[in-house]
Length: 432
View 1 (cartoon, one colour):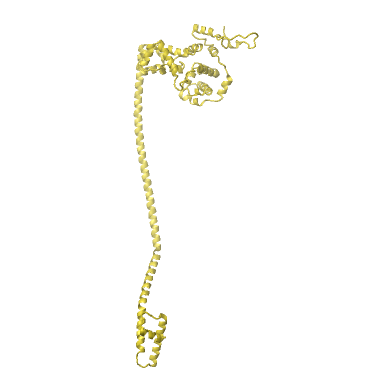
View 2 (tube, one colour):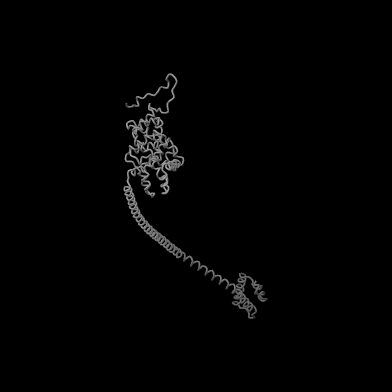
C-alpha cells in the first residue's frame, strides 16, 4: 500500500491514560526504522518516489521555515558573492540555489563561510532538492552537525583525526595496500579526503550516490568513513599498479573508472597521461619563450623610454640655459643703458673734482705769494720816505696816494708780524 504523509496522524498529547514512551525505532511520520532498514537490505535502496520523505523522517528534520527565512533575509554572504568564478555552473537556477544555501549556512555559523570544501559538499543536495531550499538547507546542516562534527578540530587544515582513523582501518583490513601507499609517499589527504569533502559526488553516478546515502542515513555516522575504506579496498588492484604520485592524483579524480579497467587500459591511461604531460611541458616551454621575448621587449621599451626621458631632460636643461643666457644679456643691456645715461653726471662730477683741485692749488699758491708782495711793498715805501728830493705838488700827491693805497692794503691784509722787521714796524706806524 502507498504511504501518504498527509494521512499519517501523530498521537495526541492529551490522550486519556498513561503516556507510552516513544520507541527509538519510531520515526516522525509514523515510520519505523527497523522496517526501513530491512527494506533497504532487501532492495538495496529506498523507493525513488518516497526517498525524500524517508530521508526527512530518518533525519528528523524540523522544517523550521521561520528560522530559515530569518537567515535568507540577511542576503548573500560576502564569502560567496564570487562563487561563480571558482565553481562555474551552467544553470543559473542551481547557482542561485547553491549561493542561497551556502549563505544561510554561513549566517547560521560563521565558520562555514571559511570552509573551502562546503560548495562541493552541498552541491549534490542542492541539485537534488533545488525546488525545496528549506529541505536542502536542513539536510546539509544535519549532515554537517552529525557526520562532519569532527571535521573542524584542525580547521582550516583537513581533519587529520578522521584521516588517521581511515588509515588505521585500511591497515586493519588491507596492510599490503597501506604499505604500498606509504612506500609511494601517498598520504590519506590524497586518497581519503577528496572522497569525504565531496561526499563521493565526484566519483559516483547519481543513482550510485543516492543508494550510498540511503545507507549512510540509515546507519551510524561512522558508516561514511567505512564506505571510504571499502571504496579504497575495492580499488586495490589499480592502486597497487600505481608507483608514482601523479598516477594517484589521476586516480583521485576518477577512481570509479579504475574499477572496470584492465591492466592494458591502465597502461593506455598512463601513456595518455604522459602524453598530456609532454604536451603541457611543450606548451609551458612555449609560454616560457614567449615570456622571455616579452621580457626582452619590455627591457627594450624601458631603455627607449629612459633614452627619451634623458633627451627630454637635456632639451629642458638646454632651454633653461638659453633662457638664463637671454636674461643675462637683457640685464647686461639694461646695465649698459643705465651706465650710458649716468656718464654725463660722472663727467660733471669729475670736472667738479678737477675744478676743486685747481682752486685748491691756486689758493695754496696765493697763500705763498701774498707775504712776498707785502715785503717788497714795504721796502719800496721805505726808500721813498728816505729820499732827500723835495716834493713837488705832483709827486707829493702821488706819495700821499701811495700812502693811502698802502694803508688801505694793510688794513685789508693786516700786519704780517712774523715777516716784519724794525723798518716795517716804523712804516706801519707812519702809515697809520
